[in-house]
Image 1: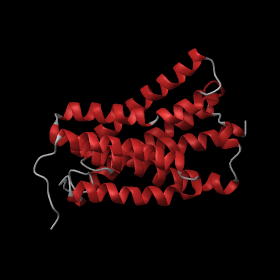
Image 2: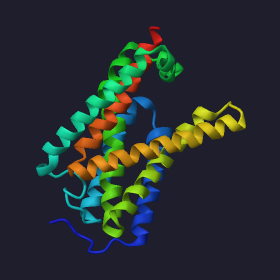
Image 3: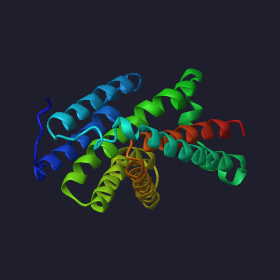
Image 4: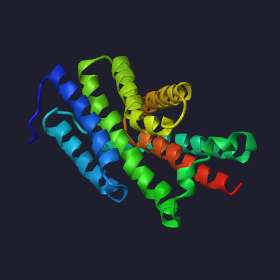
Length: 230
């Protein structure tokens, strides 16, 4: 039987946030890209074991309960279709197609272009981030705070998770433009975090935000590929 902690302390929450920050650096900056997916799967296993054995979260609190999977798949599936349609619509029109232009995508190999939307993004980004933020972190915060506070806090931290890539994208630009890129990236990803948290709580399952998250990133990548042809 798993050991359960009856009360989650402030120190536990702070420790979890620090662990997530370290994970961001280790998984996304220090690990070579070919090894990132298996490394991230291993890290997820550690987070889940910690959440179950030491934080005492149930599978339902983690969004991984069996009873809620169907509702999560239905809601997430509908959201994925809406997101895919919206992105493809933006790619069709030249005025908005430029939003998807990405020099890094242009340099990708054919193999990478296949694996990215089908494996790397769904597993290495969507599943990875949703289990950490809408599973473990949100589950812990719901134990110690109101639902609104837990949603906002986890979403803001999700936005800050994207600070390193935002700084990378802003490098080489003028100070004003760099600030705009960093602030804009954090604001957009925080907003996405609010949406994903809503999907998670409404359906009761991580399946919903995982599908929505994967659709957003994968179809944005496909949109970048389409823009290259124009």
